[in-house]
Image (cartoon, rainbow, N blue to C red; front, side):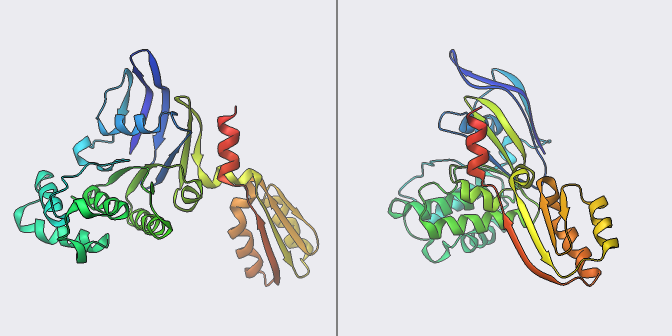
Amino acid sequence: MLRAKSLTKYYKSTPALEQLELEVPEGTVFGILGPNGAGKTTFLRLVMGFVFPTSGTVNRGGLSPAGIGYLPERAFYPLQFSIRNYLNTQAKLVGLADSLRQDEVARLLQQVGLFRVADQRIGTCSRGMLQRLGLAQALLGDPDLLVLDEPALGLDPAGQVFMREQISALHQVGKTVLLSSHHLDEVTRICTHVAVLSRGRLVRTGALASMLAPRATVVIETGPLPAELASRLSERISGATITERKIVLEGDAVLRKAEVLRLLLDEGVDIRHLSEAHATLEEVFLEAIER
């Protein structure tokens, strides 16, 4: 869907991003993480075409920047417009036909929870309402790729839950979401993949589950395990420690937990207790930026 190759951006003599090699698979929720000044927003601006690279390329998979839904970190709106009038204007700008525009705007207002206050002036809106408006604008035209810069910034807990649910819903229907965030707990809940930037360079990237798996442990306590089944599990699952009444999965074996449980159930083995200990994204993040 999206690929950066040797992507570099300098502002005068200051590097904001250097030799970035990154691929965002289609249908993923991809989080861009990093300390302040790491290059997160610069990367998103390069994706959107708001700035040009000093060198390197961004391949958007055939999409033009105009065909990408975008929510900036801080948007500036015409304060005298009503919510509805502003969205109608933006819908016209993205090329929605007159016959479809009113229904599409009404649908999005319902989706983001602003339908009842659609005639309120933007100048009187709270931060949470503005984020909802920005999301509705990003969704105009039903884009396949959405770029969200700090979507939970300044939101209260209810607003964060709302944004998380919206992003999860987009993922469920196959959209690709590229987002930056400082909220590592939120990223853990919604992202399938992450990349960690530090001082303009990529220091870690991959599927989130694979990043956390090496530090994770799953303990399955069972009834008596038949010797033949224990032997089969040992051969099949590398990283599993198996005794008569316990199976311990570590490292990559944790990713095969569902497979192990299914096999135990198919063989009629009693599963008495399941416990899991996982690494946190914070641990992975701190380790990556301290290299």
